[in-house]
Image 1 (cartoon, rainbow, N blue to C red):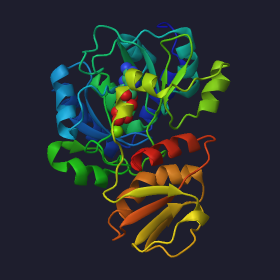
Image 2 (image 1 turned 90 degrees about the vertical axis):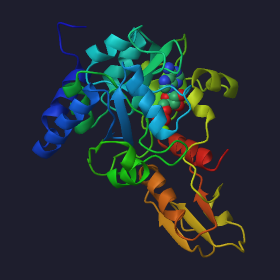
Image 3 (image 1 turned 30 degrees about the vertical axis):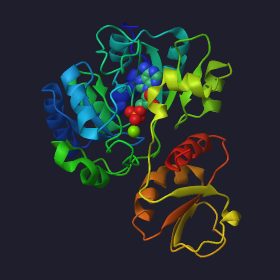
Image 4 (image 1 turned 60 degrees about the vertical axis):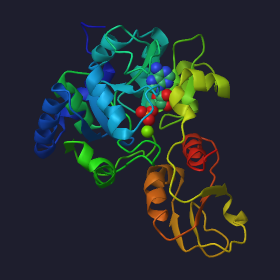
Length: 330
Ligand code: AMP
Ligand code: MG
């Protein structure tokens, strides 16, 4: 790498330069907190993250503590340049194809970790996940800190991920000194996680970059792990996630059963029957973007059960369906 500036890093630098003066000063404050071992919540293009210095085991421990997150669930390291990624993982040629194509963007790449990454950050695994977020405040925070930032979603473990700053404050406000408000996030579901440590690329978590996009760039089939394998390779996928406080049931719009309970609906089509509350989306991308907020809204609507339309798996549909199934407790 080194002598020339790679495309991903150049795109990140341009993004950082576009940051507004107000966000810049908030981000400077955030960088001071990160460098002194503290926690900062910040927007990315996927969901809001709860960040700390990825290389400081004590700072990382405070992320787990604030979220109530199981300690064997590894964190993603957020970087602002390819060079910073090279400080923490061994990048191979196929991974570099993905980096060139999708960074900055919602793609986390699992690679062999370098010793500088504390075991606590990677849940004791020999590998680490890295990504370059496509968000000016996120990139600036990393760049100004000069450190890779470990960041899971900024919610209490098990709850729907936050896609706006207000939700972060209501979940975590008293536990973190600074929430950088960058407005609503663009994707609404977390990054795609792809394991590039083996002979075949393995999709550990579907997200904003689709399986089809990965296959086109790599010119190879991307494998879906078997259940046993995915639990071993990506412990986070084992835990209950995104759960609203009332039961969620997936079904087609025309198949909502007769209900004696008050029920709510979310989906693209109008449901049969009369819900007490409903959130309708224009398409799958909008559904993914608004999913977590809709869950949080409908659980407060007085409904005793939420019915949600199950989408097809093309493009962003795979990630959307994955989050819906987890929220339904499958
Ligand atoms: P979250 O921070 O909640 O978005 O979750 C991060 C996701 O990335 C979880 O599903 C983790 O299991 C996964 N992950 C992070 N690091 C690794 C790694 N080294 N190997 C496999 N999966 C990982
Ligand atoms: Mg999360």
